[in-house]
Image (cartoon, rainbow, N blue to C red):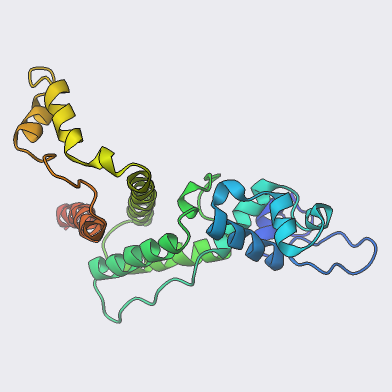
Length: 248
């Protein structure tokens, strides 16, 4: 804990409340410089390439210079997970809860797709950085006029965030897999399922296979990703609407 603010040191760092030890000459780096360089490395080379040494190289500094400000890679990842976010969108005036959450979810998707590595940052707890909390607040604002209790509003937002993060990670993985091996997404998959799926043991999947759902030359179609996301989002929001109807 930091003595002055009563916050864990890694949280104080996110909010710019942790003092840098003052030894020797005035430091030429700032936490913002280090975070920005780390994001540049991740955008260009992926999250696995991010290390204190690689970020130091990006900045043209020594690794030890970074440690004066950021004590570990875990701290660096926390900083990246907040700094990589844009400001949350303004919700349309007089928008209902569903419109507000739709705008919010699409904005999260757009922001995270700008940094495909983002969904791979290990989660160490609920949102706590300034930008993460701003996004959290904006989503809760969309639900402000609903009869939901405050814990229910949090549950709706966290469930929606889980859905969007999962969509980002899944589509990124599928896109990379398709680039590496497009044949895996062709008719061979459907033929393999017809040989492997016993409808007596897997009856539901058997009906899908028999219907020819996987009998296509290209099972991964990039321009259908958006439609799939909208379909899933509508299903989630339909569930929220049903819950609100029961409450009413």
